[in-house]
Amino acid sequence: MTMRRQLLGLGILAASSLLALQAANAMSGPTAIQIDGGPLGPLQISGGADGYLYYVNPVAGGEDTGADVANALIELQKTDGELQFTIEVGSNGGAIGLGTGSRPGQTSVTTFDTGPLYAGYITVAPSGLPVTISAGQIGSLEGYESGIDWNNPSQIVTDIFEVQNSQSRGVSANFTQGPISATVTFGDGFDTGVWNFIQGLLTYTINSTNTASLYVAGDLGRTGNAARIYGGGSVGSYGTYYVNSDMIGGYYSYTLGNLSLVPEAQFVEAKPDAAIGITHQTWNAGAALFGDYSLSSTSPYSIGGWVEYFDSHTSPFDQANWFAGPNSEGVGVAVSPTWQYKDLFARVNAGYLYLLRNTTAGFKYGYGTSGTGRNTVDATLEGGLLF
Image 1: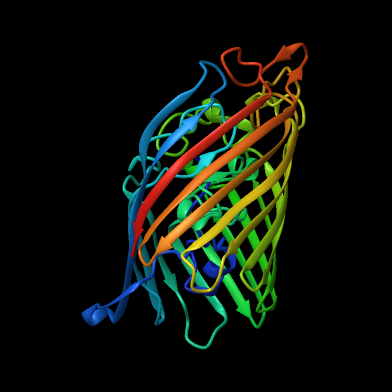
Image 2: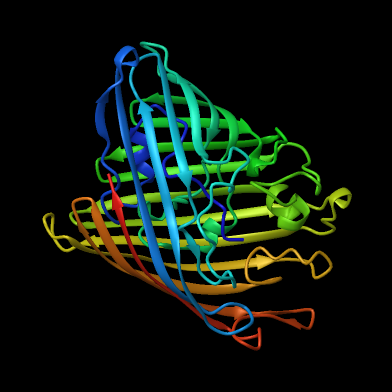
């Protein structure tokens, strides 16, 4: 379940300040180029492409190595006036889930039903009002990490990221007044085409170095197992409990000089629903601490990373594997030394995960050739160009 999340920043707001609030600051992201849009007014264009060599230790079969393209995206935005828009096209697939037990997926333009349109939405921003309305293919409000790896402290992402909704179609309303910003989105969560998913994000900017965010999400009805999910497959094969679940979480961003720290906690639960095969309550809880440190304000070198803990509860009758297996519990760490010179970047990403619990109802799961090992290591050598 490696493809869970969205383009960084809410993907829905003309209020670009919220994009900065969710940025992981592992390195400087794309810098928009200003262009003359003629009758449309000033426009901004940005994008990037990256690739990587990888080493992973999957659930079974031993080691795996290879090379993949991660992302190739270009974005065009209009961010002023009463009618604004964002269009982002290309392929995405660079965020790698630690301990997911599978080789990284090649970047793809068929990740979503919208094909190469990764994000595309129109925003109405009435003059003089603190409210904006957006509609289209937009990003999730859930969580801190991004589906575009160059926005994260590491290319390797946490269990928290793995259980979240990704891009989907919807309508979003944002209210910003002083230090408070609130966003509500209604749409077809998990790109299912079933419009019954609601999300909310509340952000409070305490000062220039402290920001707190709280997010919630849930399915207002029932999304059946036959519904299509993302660019292919069905809800039933993907995981009924992912789509038919409720989530609450929050993160706090703190910056001190060249150091940035972000703790996050999250809880997601799927209630029993016999009609879609969820016979017992099932949940996943996770916590992580993200960090990034630049050697100096002028140095091309920085180091990002995180530590995490996760725990899940599942009935053995449902086989609802939120992560590595039924009732999995574990700890993980990722470290990413990074070099960036203007528009070029390179980084080494290394992650280690240990399963504190890998047995349920007599069934044992895990990593390595036996499929029962508690340890796994993922590593990549990544490089790219941003503009």
